[in-house]
Length: 104
Image (cartoon, rainbow, N blue to C red):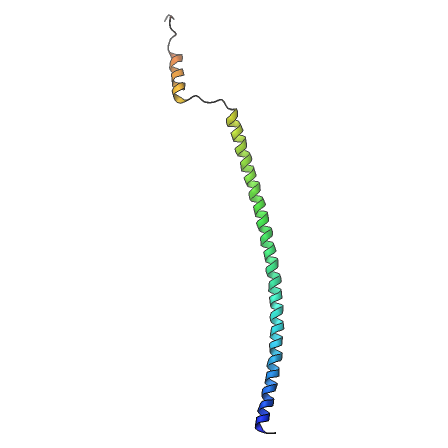
């Protein structure tokens, strides 16, 4: 066997080992990507569930605040209408003045 064939044989063996090692790395990488993909999906589902729960809580809070506002508006609508300040002042003056034709 000459030197050139020994080099070729060594090269083929190295190439075969490298190819086998590359396939092992590929299989490991696929497993890692699958695991990461599963974890990412689980995390996404968790985040979506939290977002839905948060949205529901915010809607509940908004509903309570709207209910309070509605009650306040009903109270304001049921309350007697206040007189404007000028009218109230004139009414006070009229009440303190003696009636015409009365004796003091």
